[in-house]
Length: 259
Image (cartoon, rainbow, N blue to C red; front, side, top):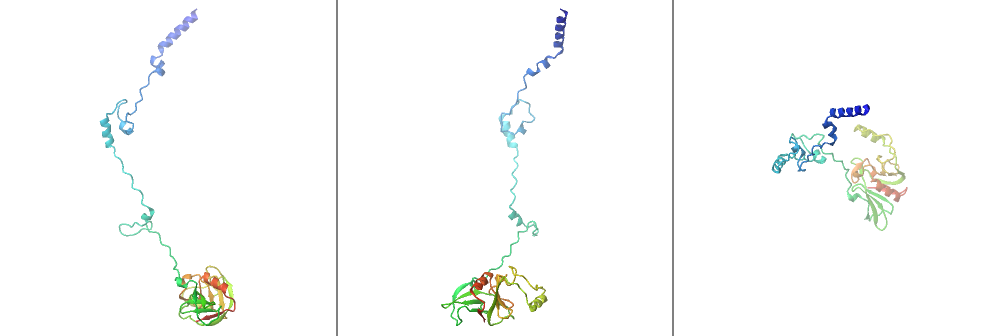
């Protein structure tokens, strides 16, 4: 009987030692959660007020009116406009310099494009006539017509005339400048190669018709914008597409008359 009494006494003593606040804390009511009645008001406006305090509507309106709205930053100017800007002193910096324009090679006059024209000369069909004054090459046809091409001819001091035969034809010919030309260009400060293989950069272009035993040729060019002028060292130059067309129309042995 003594043991139950001891246990009851111990339980009573423990109950007195425990604080009522700690014993019932988990069941105590929590402080109310305060939510701003005006949810659109900036949260900064709620700082510094006591929980549960409701700001009057008129005061809320006044505080919202005092909030400064920062203006949006101006949009960056387009890069094209930035490149066109100039410093106040008038100097255009490299960073702002406008892009350079690409150089465009000039086109030839349309009159020098291939076309069929009337021809009343006495030469028989298949003959090539070269007019070095007007810079035209005529391939005589039938029925009083001829196919006319624009050409580049000898510059002043390199003009010539005569009659020859086409002795050979070559596609994408190699170029071997004569010794006189090499010496002449060296005096101008330009060094010519002893030989250049055929290709788009070769001055003889895509095709060549060799005239007799001379050094002259009817050939293409890598400078088509020179057609129609007196520009060569005596050769007759044509656009590559034109000399390719002529190449297919004539044969070795064709008569060439240069006037």
